[in-house]
Amino acid sequence: MRWQRLGVVVLLVASIAGLTVGYVMQRRAHDALGQQIKVVEREMGWASDAVRREQQLLERFRRKDVLLARAAQMGLGLSDIVSTQRVTIPLVTDPGWTTPVVTVPSTTSAATPGPLATAGGVPRQNAR
Image: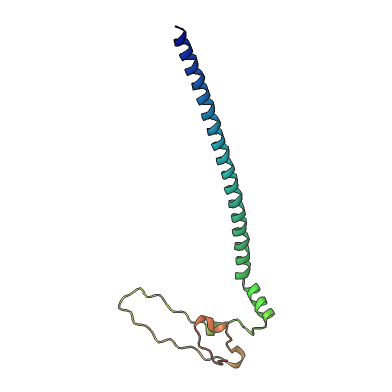
């Protein structure tokens, strides 16, 4: 009878020790996972702040007044296009439609197109 009691006690002590070791290991893994989550959240916060800053900068640089001021500051000699230099090409919706001949209206000396004006597809009159 003593051996049976001793066996039960040893089995219980070993079970409790195994459960304790398992609990400690699981707790450490849980804490490590929590640390990894905090690191990822910190990196996501940094990345979202960087994206927000870059979006604000992009929005600022897309504004016309900022672009013209920057062009004037750099001394590029760019000028805004006038409405007669703008060419609108309609979308093709009918497969039997033929391409029309596009003519560019003549410009006067007051509206000499620069490199900024040629970005819309109007041919340059004074090549450098």
